[in-house]
Amino acid sequence: MTPIKTIALKEFKDYFISPIAYIVISLFLIVTGWFFFSTFFIYGRADLRDFFALLPMTFSFFIPAVTMRMFAEEKNVGSYESLLTMPVSFTHIALGKFFAASVFAAAMLLPTLSYPLFISFIGNLDLGPVAGGYIGAVLLGGAYCSIGLFASALTRNQIIAFIIGCAICFTLTIIDRMLFFVPERLVPVVEYLGANAHFTNISKGIIDSRDLIYFASVIFIFIFSTDIAMKEKN
Amino acid sequence: MIDVQNLTKYYGDFCAVDDISLTIEPGRILGLLGPNGAGKTTTLRMLTGFYTPTSGTIRINDLKMPEDTLKIKSMIGYLPESAPLYHNMLVYDYLDYVARLKGMNDPKRRLSRFRELSRLCGLSGIMAKPIGNLSKGLRQRVGLAHAMMSDPDILILDEPTSGLDPNQIAEIRDIIKGIGREKTIIFSTHILSEAEATCDRIAIINKGKKVADDSTEHLKQNARHRSVVRLTLQNAEITATLDHLKAFDASLDITVTDTPASEGISFELCCKDDKDIRRDLYLSIKKTDWIITELARQSLALEEIFHELTREGA
Image (cartoon, rainbow over all chains, first blue to last red; front, side, top):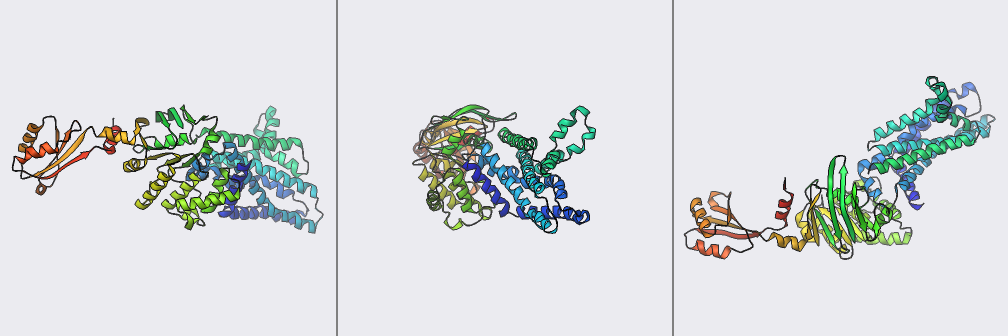
């Protein structure tokens, strides 16, 4: 357990040593804040539904930007070699980096807690969906982090890692709007694969084991693939 | 005791390391010599567990790759070729990170180890500097501290002195010799004098194949079976001298070397055996009116062996 913690801690600190953290968090807040509040007063509803509805889309761009450097940079600079020759396993490294990225994704959400706080002053806010929404957001963040991590493990080029990560996350986000093109029999399967539907369920305040299992499996599959990708490259 | 048998590594179709076997006794310094692209780094990377060999076995004591890779990794300290480090970390933070990953969980032990290493590798003034701001030589020292962090039994150093200035090279060499009294060290280099000065044993690799593997002493002795005498004469003519030399000893292999006319004519006389011909040569030339300005014997040391074994097409 200790090597995972050491790696996670180091990776998490790295975000804040370099300007990445500050730039990504500010941009994320500007984008989500802008889209959410531009229509908030027009509808006049005291909830965060629009904020959460947009989150899978914003996450599918922001999370790969956060994770793209995790392996690609190490490989490019060469520190990957010293990391792998230390007494840690591939799984330690993958998990350490995954936790660092997920905690960072959660940290990105932290300032948005001020939205429900202020909304609760001006209206009657139902806390159930808000709590559900944040739980879902953390799970979604985790799932997209594992995808981004996998993309980063495939290449030594950060831009390629970003684009692959975006592509997979974006596909998972919009796939349930593409059902029109899918043969009828496959519709339930493809619908289940999309992240959006599961996230929407949770953010309504319904915590269903099916949705939890979905996110857990995405995380597991992509961390496992990361592990394989790392082994394969050596 | 490190035991490597039939180690082979392919990158696609390209064979980088071809059937190399090595055994290294504990407490010895082994130098891995070879021209650029010979497969030195690949070999070392397989020893450290960074690359998986295509075939062949690596055993360290009674541990075997890949089953005990984690245990083996914790016994090895490794300095990669370009000492790659995290550029945005401070030296202290980096060493702390390395120490934790190497399982040194006791903060007191970490601190005392940092003090030792800082003295040993000369890091005292740079602990609070970002690694990215350090010069190549200083980075190399941080890398060395990284390799020695957990006081490992085996140190693997990939070109530890490349890119350093002569003073730093001497320092690093002293450090290596110092540690080498107790630890097993394998290091690669393409500088012959370095290997000669520090290693107990030298293995020469060319195009992925091991072409020589012997103690430094032995290698040097074997080299002396042929010796070259350099002779410079003034007041002489080439044809006359050549005839004279042929008459003196027909088995000599004579080459005329380029020298400015004012210096006279120079020859390199290669003897088939280790015999010293200088005395007889002098006596025979004394009879003529030529003037000897140079008569020196060069022993074919490592350099010659190296050239011979690693020549194109050899």
